[in-house]
Structure formats: structure tokens, C-alpha cells
Image (cartoon, rainbow, N blue to C red; front, side, top):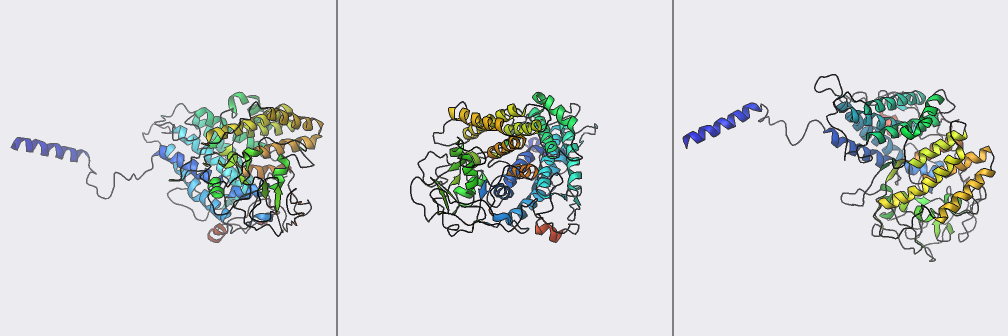
Amino acid sequence: MKNKIIVLFSVIFISLSSCSDFLDINQDPNVPTKPEIEKLLPGIIREVGDIFSLRFSGINNVTAVYVHHLTTRESIDAYQVKAGDYAIRTSWDATYVESLADIEVLMSLAEADGDGDGFKDYAAYAGIAKIFKAYVYSQLVDLWGDIPFSEAISDINSPNFNPVFDDDEQIYAALFSLLEEGIADLQDDTSNNFLLPADDDIIYGGSINKWIRFANTVRLKLYNQVRGTALWNESVVTSLLTNKGDSLMAEGGDFWMPYGSSNAPDNRHPGFVSDYEGSQISMYCSPWFYEILNGENARIFNGITDPRIPYYFYNQLSGDDSEAPPEYRNGDFMSIYFGSQGINRDHSARKSATQVGIYPVGGRFDDGRGGSGTPDNATGDAPHRFLSYSDCLFIQAELAHNGVAGDPKALLEEAITKSFEQVDKVVAMTSTTQEVPVLKGSDELSDYVGFVMSEYDSGDNNKKLEIIMTQKWISMFGGNETDCYTDYRRTGYPVLFDANNDVASGGPDGSGVVPTRVDRDYPLSMPYADTELDTNDNAPAQKNITTDGIFWDN
């Protein structure tokens, strides 16, 4: 027995000796001091998705109102966005303090050379981090123009609370280089790559090829936006388009962040939570947008009903009276006008206003039966659409229209067709219990595309561009509304509701002519968050958002 005790003590002593920090009470082995690289990526993607998805008081809600997909009773109505608005403050702060900071941590860990062999330990993660960083910064530039970049998060261990604001055009130039670096990292076959992304990549499941195609598509998108500036590089664009079968986003390569149907923890689409769970409707569907889809706008697509309407909007009304006299009612569609001064604008409409539907946020499909849309009859598990395959096709159509490689008509027709199939794909990702018809291959799709292409054929050069951009605007509803805002400022299309001149009729069943007015010119950029201006010693003076545009705005 004595010998057994001695042997046991010896084993314990040797074990303790081989692990010198076993008794280090200042370090909990269950609380790592360095984040595990594969656990960073899904959180980063979710953070950015939450910031840029359609949701009440989010930056995409602001831009959705400014491109007249939505209207609202909030301060952003009539172009009255302010530096102290919740959407401006939280989007700015969350992007820098959370998303971009976490991306820098991921990039720092991925580029480490832990074994001293001169190569990166996790080159694939480094590539993804750089590509995502470039994408997020491009969105910030498109919204604000000059922003902190070079000094924003220069040292993750020593934060700089007073970063300079860099020139927006110079930032874009750096982003092109960053995207190329990211692609090179993904193609790096010399580094160890001790760990490759897999399930932690909640968008592409670890597909390196899809990340490379996404990066190239972002390059194409940004080059398209800077056409007419010193950054335009037609040879690069032509090369991407010539080799698009191997380089650009392909069908099935949509850059979408999935949401779920759980409410504990809540992983539903933020826009669904905003509109289906709140005590009041917060995102009103634009009558202008609806009338274009319904073939009622005299200027464009007049006389054809878009088959996507019941996927885009859910009408809570079905022949019943609303809670109060409606400002705008068109059949069962009920909403309020942008810039409204009407007497019925602020009436309660929780159980009667039209809600965003299954396609934008995983809400209800409109089967014509009506009834209040709630978390009990919809799930909210639609994805946030950062960048879609159909977007890539619309970009190509615009470039072809401007004489850069390709047949604009053929590309437009393919883009519209794929935007319809995109709706089917979103519906298939939701856990709806409704019977939802498929658009692909339907007579309605064929008739609609034929009508649009006929209108395209009869239009002059400006009309053709208007049709391309308006169809892209229709397709992107509820997705990346910032890109819609960018497209409008670049091209002037689609034509938006003019609250000072267009007649707000109230709809066939509404309250007659509704007075509307805006007292501010169209915002060419977003105001800087007042929190940043108040705390950053190197921040510039607040801009005039109606005159200070982005460098590509011509």
C-alpha cells in the first residue's frame, strides 16, 4: 500500500512539473485570453448583417425611405435625417466599435506566423477578413464620404480615439488594393493554413472559390460606381467581364446572411421583429413603389402588374374597414405618403397598414385573406441580401449600356428573370406554413418580362438606362438599400416621388388628395454622428448633406 501511494505521488508530481502554469490562479483555462479564430467569423458576419439589414431605426431603413421603398412617421421622413438620430449614431458606432474592430482582430490572428516559417498561419481567414473589411468600408464611404480609415483601427491593442478622416476617393483606391490582397491570400498555396473555414462561414460554408468570386464582384461593383472618375479602370473591368464565367459571382453564389426562426435567442430578421412584433407599424410600404409594381405609374411599366407584389407586401386588410380613416388605400394596400401633411397620417394602423412581406423579412405571403401579421403566423427567417447574383447581372447590364462589354438587353432580361427566381429562393429558405406559388417558369413571369423588354426596345438611350436601374431597384427591395441609394445618386434613376409636385391622390379608396411637402433638398450623403464629432479631436465640421456628396456622384 505504501509503494502504491509513493507511485501515485510521483505521477502527480511529474504531471505538475510538466505543466508549469497549472497552479497559476490568475489564468482560467476555461476563459481563453486569445479568441479562437474560427469563432470570430460568424459573429462578424452577424454583426454586419444586423447593422445593414432592413430594420426600424437602422441605416438601411433610412436609405430605404430615401429611395422610396418605404415611408415612415419618423424624423427621416421628408429627408430630415439628423446627426443625433438613433440610426445614424448606432450604425456608425456599431460598425467601428464592433464589426471593423473584430475584423481587425481576425486579420491580425490570421496573418500571424506562429511557427516562424515566414508564412501566414491562416491565409484563407486573412483573405476573407480583408475582403469583408473592404466591403464594409465601401458601404461607409458610399454613405458618408470622408471617414476614418487609415487611423481608424490602426492598432487593436492601442485604440486611437481621435482618428483622422481620410479622403473618400483615396479610401476607395485603398479598397481596390485590399480586395486584391484578399484574393491573393485565398489563392495562397504556400502558407500552412492550419485551419480552413467551414461551418463557421455561415454564408459560403468555407467555399474559397465563392469568396473569390464575391471579391471580384465587389471590385466590379465599385469600378462601376467610379466610372467617370480617375479610379475608373476599363481594362480591369473588361477583363473581369470577359472571364466572368471563372471570376464573377455565379448562380448560387449570392452573398446572403441567413437568419433563423428562433426568438430565444432571437435570430430572426431584424425587419421582421420591427414590424411583426412591435405594438405599432414602423416601416410603411411606399405608395409610389406599390403603384409602379401595380402598373399604375404613367411613366414606366404602365399597364402590367408585377407578380412579385404578394411576396413583397402583406395586406392585413381584406375588404374590411381599417382602424381609422386611411391616408392611402388602394384595394387592400394601405399606407402613408412620403412628406405627408395629411390629417390621417398619424392614425393607428397596427392592424390595417400593409406590412413588408415574406421576401424582404420573412413575413407573410399575401394570399388575399388578410388578418394581422404577427410572430404567430410568420417566422422571420429570410436572409439579409448583401449582394445577389441578380445584382451582378444588373451591374453588367448597366456597364454594357455604357459601352463596356456585353449585350445590355440580353443581360437585362437575364437579370430580371433571375430576380424573380431569387424570390423563390428566399421563400424556400423560410419555414412558412403557407402555400406559396413558384414564380420560376410561370406565365406571369414570362408575360411581365416580355412587357418590360418591349418597353425597353421602344425607349431611347435614357429610357433604357431608366428601365435597367428601375428593375434593379425593384429587385433589391429589402436587401442592400444603401446600394439603391448609391445608384440613385449616381444615375438619377429610378424617378422618385416628388412631394412638392406629384399629386398624392390617396389611392382609389383613400381620402382624396393628400397634402405633401419637403423643405429640404435631397441628401447626397449622411450626416456624421454627433457622438463622433463631439469626441474625436480630429473630426471635421459637420457637413451640409444636401451639397457635400460622394466623390463618384456626378
